[in-house]
Length: 455
Ligand code: PHE
Image: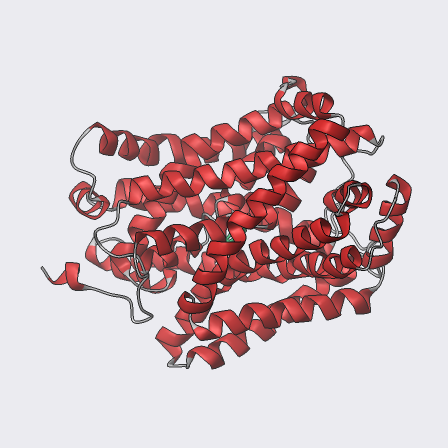
């Protein structure tokens, strides 16, 4: 059969492990360590975490399987994958706009993601210069404020991170990053465990634990539910084609179900560990859990500043954080780059320059939103808040729901069964049921309740 011989013009992963590493690299990023703690802090803790976990299991994992499956069958950038599959399944060609929305979402996310990754870059040097020594909560806040109020500094770090990202993407994903991620992800994990250990000894671990795991459902507002659901897409890199394009490089014989579970499991573990590393410090130092995007930058330095070897461990932590962000950022722009190569005959390098400059320019808006434009608000949100809300809470869930609908309703059952390669048993039926009914309905219900239709 011709279809089985299809491969991507951009190449293929060396095997199952390479895909797991790359997909985990994409999933584990700033979302887990920077974003998850602060949105949990802003939305009241336990109930928010529980709802997020529910979304990961019932919507995230099935949609991840669907997205990998579509990617592997289409074997091209999300735009061309959707166009191709729509043709094969005799569906409307407008399905390719789903690919377009993904490319746009990835581009917008990277524009601010890079600015935040720039903060982490700056903090590597602050940690290693010993600036955290014996710092208290107030000092840590001041240190953070001094960074974000300096647009020139922010712009410089943002530029450096964008160049780093484009350099890797230009080379093709495999050789450099695959290898780096396989060392750095375990390293990051170890340091997180160490920080949790430190907190058990020094911080207010009990309070931290209660905050993360004791649900108070009165705090779970419809908007908090939307944010939790949006985050389950964001943290698993779903709904914009990153996982789809990684799936397009996946060899035919690899199990989609098993690998998806592993990626989602690792991602969730890192987020929960990050929470356990951060909240005890928040409570032990009388800090505000709802401090917002600066939360980890205002808490972790306190711990690093007090522990023995904190200069080294703090420096390593932020290095790892940069690597986690790096392996995610390449997947945010890969769909756009692949499309430029496929449809505009560009060389990879040129495609990277074009998409990198465009992303960098939009990122300037985020840089300014923390200083000169901090009072400039649309719908009560700064430029950064607005981009984050629009992409994570609206575009990704919408994209994910449409992916589920395509995989569950538009695609013939026979095609899905063939590509999933998991046998025609209960597991396939369960997945098919989840993508057909549960995932789209859940997304629509959460949207409606957030808009206020369901109050
Ligand atoms: N999953 C990444 C994180 O948690 C962010 C991301 C979103 C990456 C969407 C790719 C696509 O940081």
